[in-house]
Picture 1 (cartoon, helix red, strand yellow):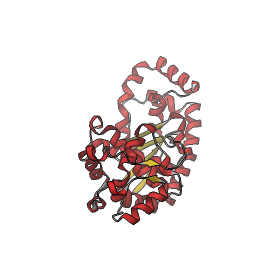
Picture 2 (cartoon, one colour):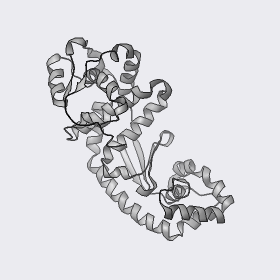
Picture 3 (cartoon, helix red, strand yellow):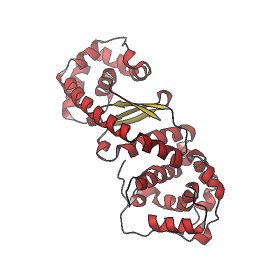
Picture 4 (cartoon, one colour):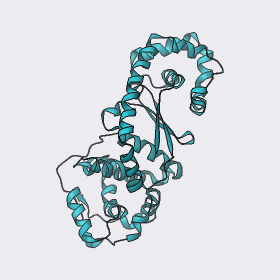
Length: 286
């Protein structure tokens, strides 16, 4: 997967206008513009997808409000900070390209787009959105202080899965599979020995019930390997209650989610799994 790390002036301006007001300075700036350019403010709301679609070739229908933003001292300050941040993210992506490809092929086994456009927005604007139609991740978040690779893969994979599966049906099962694949397994491979203790407490039981089948999905198909892995992850279960399914290692993440849903009555009835370490579950990345 090729990742293009980009700063787009109009997109940064758009999120400054329409994103969340998370500081008094930004809130005051937006209110002043709205008071002065109310008509233009309302008209430009529709522009975001057009900006993504045309990139650097985007031309606004009405540039009055964009010019007001681009010429402001607040925007100029944010742009300098974003440009520096883009270099930081681009360096991480370049250094980690092989690692990312390996995670996608060996863990997610899910069709990612060949190129993802990584639009950098200022972290103060707190934006993490993936637009599937344009293969565009819009990124500006304090989550950068955690692991950028994990959050990036989680954002894209979640969006791809949610596009295919009704969240009202899969709901907590989908959240659990995402945690197992990215927060836990990828986190573990990145050197976090406590990765399987991390996550949202609301899906921790479901996740642990899925855990033996998750190991089969990863390619562990004999009891000795499964038991060794269980000890390594410090998750205990009675393997005699589990039927080994060698076909799971052939599945994509998408197909594994469907398998878990189709077999949910059997899987979620096995109350024989527990974490055997005294480490509280915590939502480290989200």
